[in-house]
Image 1 (cartoon, rainbow, N blue to C red):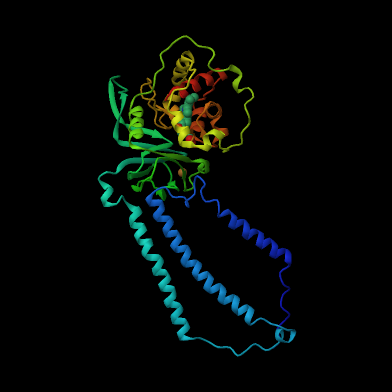
Image 2: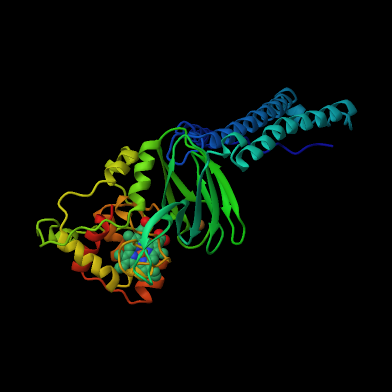
Amino acid sequence: MRFPNPPTRPGRWALAAAALAGSCLLSGCFWLDGPQSTFDPNGPVARAQLDLFYVTCWVTLAIFVLVGSTLAYAMIRFRARSDADTHAEPPEQHHGNPLVEVSLIAASVFSLVIIAIPTLKGVWFSYDVPEAERAGAYEVTATGYQWWFKFDYPNEAAQTTDAATGKPASAHLTTGNELVIPAGRAVHVSLRTVDVIHSFWVPKLAGKVDMVPNRGNSLWIKADNPGYFWGQCAEYCGESHAVMRFRVIALGPREFNDWLNSQMAPARSVPAAASTGAAIPKAQFVAYREFRRNEAGYTDRFDVSPLEAWRRQQVPNSGEDPALIAKGRELFGAKTCSSCHTIRGVDGAVGVQGPELTHVGARTTIAGGLLENNRDELHRWIHAPNEVKPGNKMWVNGYLLNNIRLTPADEDALIAFLESLK
Ligand code: HEC
Ligand SMILES: [Cu+2]
């Protein structure tokens, strides 16, 4: 039997392209500290998962090197060296070698066991807070909504007023889109959803766990140190899934307590006074730039040190205009914003369709972590939520259904009010 001529060798260009693609891939591996990188763990759960990843990686790398070098050896050693070789009869064929086969099976089983033991340990470890830390664990509940996260603190009371009687009452503390936790302490997070399946993922603290309707999943996280961590819904959940994000802010014990105390208080109320006029230059939004949908909005200042940005955000802004704020407070009811948003301490603002806004001014981001919480981005959001985040419920069930129309003056007032809610 004669063999046909071998196919032509891959061209030099193809080789060069493959080398280029390979080195691009490799160089990508050197930037491993991005805000959502799992290679830069900041807590024991994420670290355990990364260690497991490395075990798997090394075992498979060893297999790759073994198989790859055997293949390379066979290809080079037994290649056709001359035209006569190419057309020669194939050598005598063998079939089966019990020793080789049994040892290959044994080697595979061995590799799988090496991977399986730490995997099972890791599954157990990340499933629930370890026994030793359970007593001191902090409890929160995260609930997925299309397309934002609600965070409840079931053990923290928040001051509010009873809607029916107007008397002071208390509810548990609720926030949205930014989960503030104590650093250095295990936090047990119960996972819920009100609509479809979402997935809770803070890459630097722990792997993903799904939020499934009618199923009580949970996970635990622990931040080694105070820090600011990016989170993301990791299960496709509709139109704006890609921008369904959140933040986790871990604080030292004292700072965490201060934060809790300020959150429990009802919304900050700025005493009514005559307009200072100077606060907001009126034509501020005339030259408003166009954004593409889903385009994140952050200033450079924010990115450099988000935890510092978070701290700056806790303090009331200078140059507030009390009259403008008072007008915004009124518009919040008049424009039906209050039917979807709770602001403890503001009459009638008891809605629960949207994130709780009692202290929204003290958050660093809005709209599910898509936009930095500043005047421009607040404007961008309340001016045309649909242009920012397609299909979001504030637009569909609010602006469209309630026919909400805001004049530039309304927007100024609402923004001043929202920014005052520290
Ligand atoms: C139909 C219910 C509804 C109405 C009415 C409504 N909102 Fe919202 N709002 C939402 C929802 C839902 C979100 C979360 C959207 C998302 O991120 O996907 C939201 C988000 C927000 C946010 C960002 C909060 C955060 O932490 O991300 C602000 C600020 C806000 N709304 C202000 C307003 C104002 C001001 C009005 C009135 C002009 C208003 N909303 C009317 C439902 C509503
Ligand atoms: Cu989601």
